[in-house]
Length: 234
Image 1: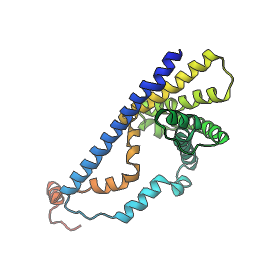
Image 2: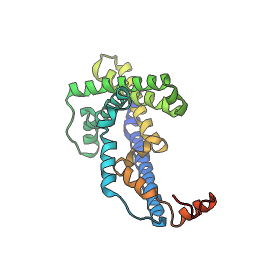
Image 3: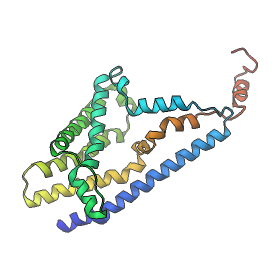
């Protein structure tokens, strides 16, 4: 069991991390390339940079919308994503692995904060999962991965919590830690192949939209002609 755990922590982790990085870089390059290509073909090349910046900030920090439309869902989703991002990056045990592996480290969360965020993330994922099942509109728009992702995402949180905060036998600890490591690596490997992959474009999302959603030159005339509305008053 220990040899399998060492393999998962070493070569398998490096492989899954490389898959994630290369996959996200590919998505970023393709999206930016296609947006620039669409922009070059556009008739109207004006860009509302200020509006795009404001929309980006509102999308990253949806404070206003969180308390207007579906406030409970929005708050739960925000809290879930906070824990989902902060715990894997700023957990002391994870930082120590980076330090022992490549010699870099950074600020870590206090242990009580890490425990609180872990439990909050688990509760948030379960609430979002049940909310999707219980909402007819959400069910109609959901795919299989929309149900599986919340469950997969909390698996390393649940296993990590038991490893760090409960007393386990050596065999049970190794098995639980193996689940923790493998589930985390599965998430890393799958990221570039799911809709979550577009998280890499979060800072540029509105700029990509502004670039890409530009009609090619003279397409308005073609649309009017196809609708038999050419020359008609607007």
